[in-house]
Image 1 (cartoon, rainbow, N blue to C red):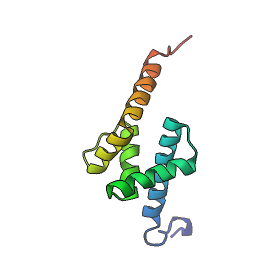
Image 2: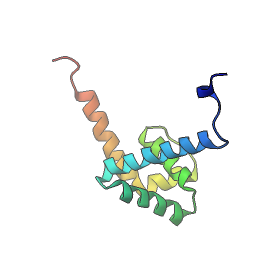
Image 3: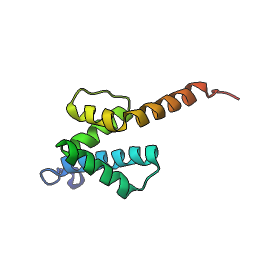
Image 4: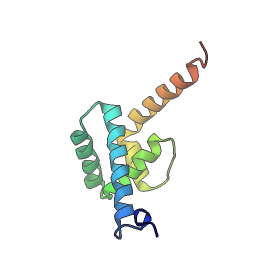
Length: 105
């Protein structure tokens, strides 16, 4: 067996996925608000704490909605309530820009 392909310690893959999702969620808030990564992280932590959700649920829901993948969990509802207007305006602007850009000059 190739030692580079051996599975890592238990939970490593889940932890790596969780960290990547957190990084992406922070990036979404940085893009929406123009804030620092520390401020984005604290906003995510506050949303989780205030609503009794796990941080991983909030970050996953934020990434889902920002990626135009809708969800029905209560974490998705929290994301829509907290950042829905920002996300909607940003997704609408991005969509308009994408469709209005000529393919050839």
